[in-house]
Length: 152
Image 1 (tube, rainbow, N blue to C red):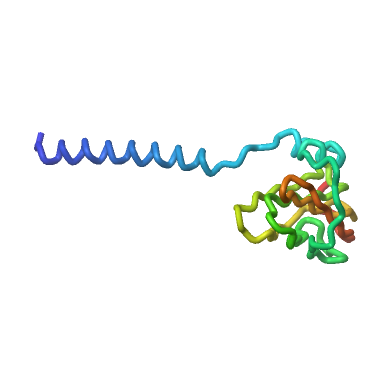
Image 2: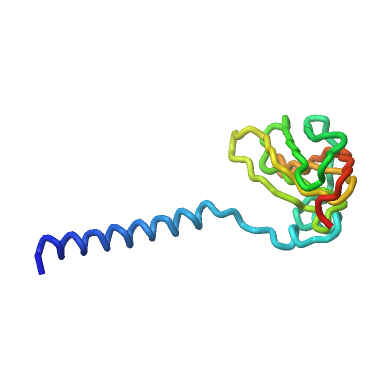
């Protein structure tokens, strides 16, 4: 066998193994811990408890942008903006969904407290944003009326 070819194959294999190791390590580092209990909660109170949001403070510094009436519950656009300093995370809860906690988004240090998602909602419900900032939990609520069901 050609020595140059053999050397090339050895180096290629080593580079591939190194690359796979880096990807695995990078993927693990980027993966956020999964709060399984909070996402599997079927009641809003249980989801809040599992998030750690015990004493919620109503805040006018949280803006929920959502339609007053959504024509299709399968795709409801929701945006949450937090003007609270040092926002650490934003969670979105659709109170009447089978599993109310729809998402939790971590905000990097100094990052803008903004999240935009599309929810699936089966019926008219309050959409609640829960913002964690400096170890405290803040909330705001907006009712979204659904004319055609999305989940259920």
